[in-house]
Structure formats: C-alpha cells, structure tokens
Image 1: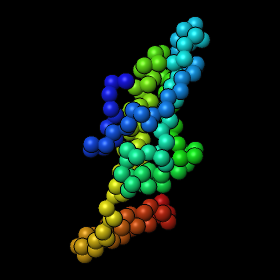
Image 2: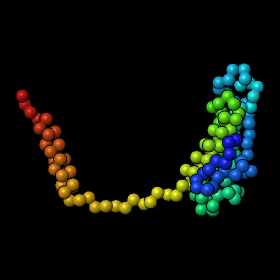
Image 3: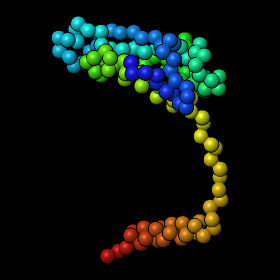
Image 4: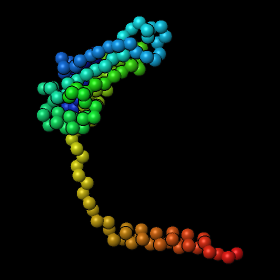
Length: 141
C-alpha cells in the first residue's frame, strides 16, 4: 500500500484495524486469473474503531447501517489483474465511503419569501401560456 488513506482532515484509516482477505477473481486475466488471488475484500470494524471521533462514528454507523454486518463495513475490488492495484482501489474506495458517511449534514435550507414582482411576472406568463393554448382549440376553420 502507498500509505495512510486520509478520510478527512488529519483522520486516516489505521493500518492495524484493516482486515484484508484475498480470493480468486473473475474477469480479465486469462489463465493467470485461475492461479492468483487478485480479488481483494477489505473489512473495517466501524463499531469498534478508536480512530474516528465519536460523533463521526455515530454518524457513519447510522448512514451505513444497510452496508454493515455486525458493525463491520466491507469493500471489494477485483477490477485489476494485480492484487496490489486491487488493494489500492479497495482502500481508496473505503476511505471515500467513510468520508462521505462521516460528513456533517448540510445546513438546513431557510425558506425565503418570493418577491412580489417575480411572483406577479410568473402568474402573468402563466396566464399568457393558458391564453395561447386556449387559442389553439375550438377554432372552426
């Protein structure tokens, strides 16, 4: 691996808490694919990790609830022929997934009143469109 994978800010995936599993991959590779364990499954115990702040962990557990099995999030990669490239892909994918899951919620949208002039213009244009459509029907040529 090329180093620590940053989730956000100074928080990164701890190498010691990553669980790797390798297996035979399907896809391109010819006879090579039948002999090498190039598919990578990367597992990260989100429920037990100490690397994430508690707020982030709670947010991630809530948002990734559908992907978790026993508090563990799992990512697979088998696009490449080499195990090393699949490891890189899986780690980047996991870091991106956790970055998205731990992101703070967006600020609530504040309602604004529509200015009177804009609303009047909208209603005027709507009336005009109705007149145009009404003019298309009922004519006896």
